[in-house]
Length: 454
Ligand SMILES: Cc1cc2nc3c(=O)[nH]c(=O)nc-3n(C[C@H](O)[C@H](O)[C@H](O)COP(=O)(O)OP(=O)(O)OC[C@H]3O[C@@H](n4cnc5c(N)ncnc54)[C@H](O)[C@@H]3O)c2cc1C
Image (cartoon, rainbow, N blue to C red; front, side, top):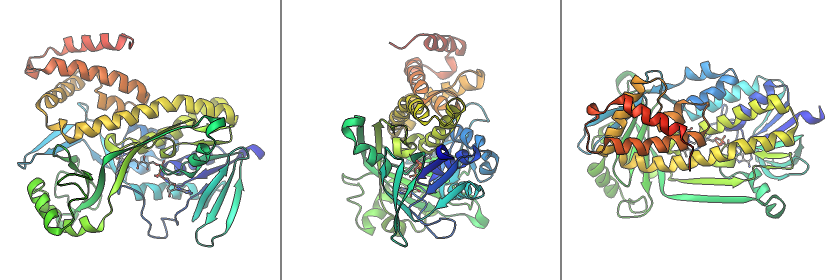
């Protein structure tokens, strides 16, 4: 069994799914998590309370035999519900095809379901309160500190895989080897942060606003979104600048917060009876993009998930991309088996450009969600995309390529999607969408697909 022990650092979403798949393949897996067991102790499950799960994530879960069970805990969100300042609501479907939608899922609930599955497996051992301090890369040995007993100990495997999130210690160990690994690293913070609030359930656990939608209140340089929960509540997230007259740094008194909400989100207030209290109680989180390379060292250590590519949440793809990492890693293993050096090299070759692409797309969507969703040309382009998707099975908008086409790599989806966007925006300018000849549009799109990028 010398080559068969895998140490995974971080039992979040990515690490736990990886542990399950590697366990299913017969490896001995040690899964270490710095926090207590979230099934037994109340711990903050992580950043956001709920998440949008879509086809890339579902495809990875299906490979672990978990898709059907996870779907039972999901609420389908079929489109964006845009709430204007005047209180109007406008629904914009995510796709022209009825079976293409995204799903709201509880982060805690999903992580617990994954942990339960991992725990059922004899060859997967879970270590909680096990905080990785550093990794000896050449010897695939990780040092842990038990946060309850303060004991320090080392765990050695054939390989160490870091799925320890954006602040990864495993990545830091790679970074420490700047010269021999030629390690590149970049971190870019947005000047916006986020804060979570709650829309409370209606009578009998009903949803006070449309259940099957992702709600957006776009207001130019700031916005609020809300995703439904099974208990009838919605998790509300303010994406908001730190600075400026109304930034987080300026909203320092009850009066200012009330005034800000009454001016910008008056229709939300009746649904959020405790918003002022929650505003001052809940933390502000930061939002950033992390890119790095290489992701592996000496065929002994590897990072994946947010540890390798943290992205801003505006495409709802961070977890989906992390699950896709697991699926791709697992697919590659069909060819490489446990030839770790070859596997790690191939994995990073296949994933780095795709991770960079979804990172860039997520930044694009930050701008799109804030103000473009209310822009008339953008709205017309969406209408045209809907008609194309309803009419042609093989037409996918940029959003659909990213979200509903799990077999298309992110980099390819970005390239095609951007070219399509450019073309469609030109086509709808000054023209009524009803007057556009859809067959002609499809001809142009087919040409575009067959033209190599310059
Ligand atoms: C506000 C917000 C909204 C989001 N919405 C979406 C969405 O709708 N859809 C989507 O796909 N993605 C979304 N994301 C992104 C998603 O949360 C991440 O991409 C996903 O959690 C990454 O999973 P991970 O397992 O790689 O990392 P994490 O979930 O961060 O898990 C890392 C785990 O490692 C543990 N750990 C950390 N350090 C150590 C250590 N030294 N030793 C041992 N254990 C350690 C942590 O405790 C944690 O359990 C959102 C993110 C944010 C911030």
